[in-house]
Structures are given as C-alpha cells and as structure tokens.
View 1 (cartoon, rainbow, N blue to C red):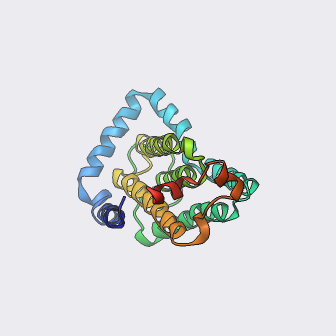
View 2 (view 1 turned 90 degrees about the vertical axis):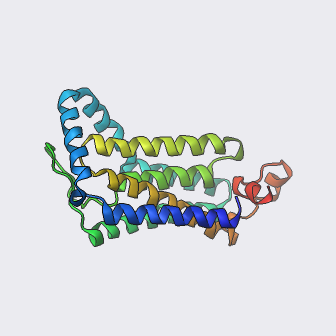
Length: 223
C-alpha cells in the first residue's frame, strides 16, 4: 500500500468517525427506529440476548487488556521490547482517548426496554473501539509473520461481532459502534505509522533474521 493510499484510508476513517459523531444518535430519527426494532427482537429472542451478553465480554477491559498484556510479555520474552512498548502504549492510549471522547461528545445511551445501562456515555462504543484496537494491534504487531493474515482476519471478525452485541443488547446506537470501529482502526493505523517511522518496528535480533523470520510489518515495507 502506497503512502497516498494509507493517507486516503486514514482520511476516510476520520470522516466516517466524524459523521457518526455529528449525525448519529437519538436526534437523527433513523437510529431510534432501529433500536426499537432491536428491543422487539430481544423480547422475541431471549436466547439471542443471553448469547450476546456473554460474547460482549470479549470486548471488555479484562479480555482486551489481558490479551494486550500477554502479547506484550510475549514480545518481551522474544527480546522485542520496542514492539512490546508500542503495543501496550497503543492499547492504553486508545482507551484513554475513548473515555475522553465520551465525556466531550456527551451522547446519551439508547433507552429502549433495557433493564440496565452502563454508567458511561454512548459515543464512541468503548467495546467496539477497544476490541478493534487490542485485537488488530496484536495481530499486526505481535503475531508471527506466518500467522499474520489469519490473525488480522480473526481480529476484525471478532471486533465486528463484539460491536454487534452492543446493538443487540441495546446499550449503543448503531453510529456509536461504527464510530468505535473507525476509531479503533485509526488508532492502529497511527501506531503502525509511528512504528514504521521510528526504531520501534525495526529488524528482529540477528538470529531471527538469519532464520528468515523478519517482522511482519518489515516484510510489507520490502514488498
């Protein structure tokens, strides 16, 4: 991917995030109708709601911070402290920014036949943003080159599923989830850009290079 393509993709994600922030939520009339339909679906399919309640935990703090911590320790064990630092910093900084954005934008959560709502505000969806950031950053920064493609596809699929559970449970507007996904992708893109322009994603130790196992992102640069 060329630098222009990367910049264009980042611009598209930023515009998508901005559109979701400005035009989404309870004021646009379209999303309340969707959430009313989702509330009726929860009443008709209680098993689906229970399944969503279980799966949504994959985007919670225990899982996202847990996998990021484990991956950072894995990188440290492989004597790749710069990559470990980049991964940990990406996940932690993204979470802090999401919390700040929620307070700044101040969008209320939907209230359509929901017995309990999280105390935080709605936009962007933290579960959607945090899972996209943690899982995709892990796939691109920590996964071995041979497993990288599968890890990326799995990370995106898992993050999409987490976001959909937030809709199913009625705790987020659709634009909250879309904005969360976009923000998570932007966070990972920023991390990769920083890593490529610094020593954080440099070559692995010499014995790894001799064995033919260069970092996944360096392979991209060489292509």
